[in-house]
Length: 160
Image (cartoon, rainbow, N blue to C red; front, side, top):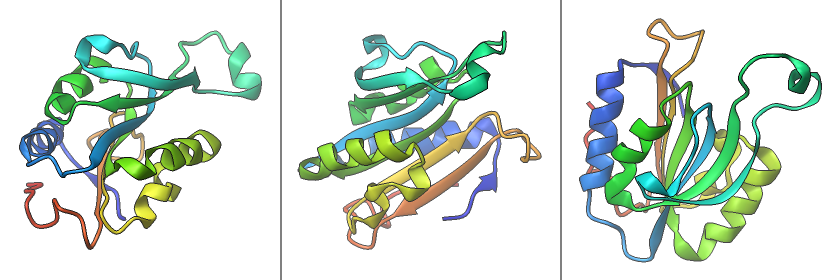
């Protein structure tokens, strides 16, 4: 899964496409990542886990600190949710089988890295990652997309 530099308009289009795609039966949408914004139910999120996005000495630096979170979302509200948290956000949206949700959440809590997430090992996953504060990107924004070989959304989404 390669990251690529993108404009924010492309991110919004990709999230709209994911939101409009047919909802795969027996799948849930999980979002995990960090943001400076407050993650609330207002944008359709059910917060499953939250913690400080920094550790160690960074806790004593007098700067705003990101919050790490895991939330379950309504697929149709993904764009609205992203807009509500787009404050230095670094997040992964995952559409995964509901029966794997708890294992994936536990894996994310332990590792906090979507690129090593258990979700990527599932043949019927979709993962869309976006970092809106990437200093290595020419636009400041990067994305990565992974669609499993058996994903019901494979071939049905346009990320252009």
